[in-house]
Image (cartoon, rainbow, N blue to C red; front, side, top):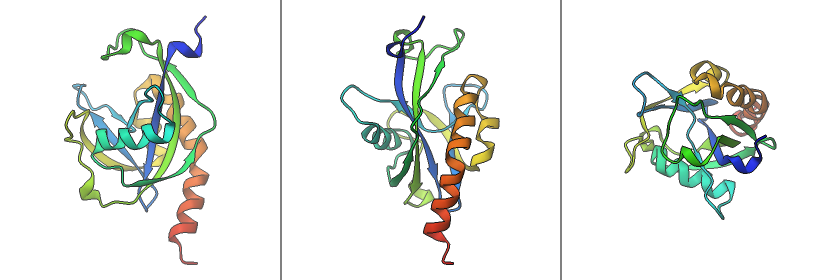
Length: 164
């Protein structure tokens, strides 16, 4: 029986643009397209909020964003035995906290060609399509993201950007 300590604490970011689309990035360590949300481990002594802004800076070159919601429920998944990543040997998988943010910058500020690039490309996509783009073992996490953040996205964007 596994315990929470068997899973790497992680934050995944739903970075919304003002039009309500979410940033997805294509991993550069896979031959085929492998789209995902920016995400990364929460380091020891680091808050979710601190890890979110550090990971955004590391992975997409900017942290020009504001947190609008943090999911209450963590979603855990196991890494498939056939997939190997650096550092994975210490964990069965990841326990992910989803964080929704509004992007406050300009698209030209997004740069996936960072010091240690994890991605080769990025794009804005409708929130409802993210489960279709993700590898199967992460699909429950992405389904939960759509369920959890659709209303928040709609309410936030309507209240912030709709003059009526």
